[in-house]
Structure formats: C-alpha cells, structure tokens
Image 1 (cartoon, rainbow, N blue to C red):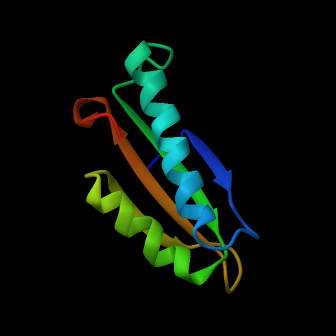
Image 2: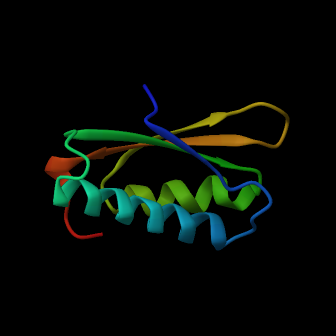
Length: 93
C-alpha cells in the first residue's frame, strides 16, 4: 500500500483519534469530489498510540466501507492504520 499522506495522532486519547481520522477522511473526499485531488484512489496513514483507538478507528472506518489495515509501527505502543479511499465509494461521509 503506497501512502499518499501520513498523519500523527500520537498523544491523543479516545475519542479524538477517531474523530480526527473521520474529519480528515471527509476533507480528502471533499477534495476528491471537487477535483482538487484528481486521483481515483488516495491512501492515508494514521499513527496512534492510544490502544483503544486501534479498535475504535478501524471499526468506524469499516462501518463506512473504506478499505483499511492496522499495522504495528515503530515502538511497542505505536500503531499505523492505513486507509484506502476510493472515489467510486464516496457517499458523503
């Protein structure tokens, strides 16, 4: 998965990693819809260090139909959540 952009949400506790992730996804979909981003697919990565976010963020992403994967990142308590946004799946999140 080639990442277009990476965001660091380290130090944030729930619900902020999930809220900020969904806000970022919405911003990227708006840019895709307006043509500011012409790509049909955008891949974003979010770094989190709050263990509950490792469950809550992917759960919300899955509800909205986005592709994702969770990976252990550098260090013992840092995870990277990779998200695939497809223009064809935009539904006004």
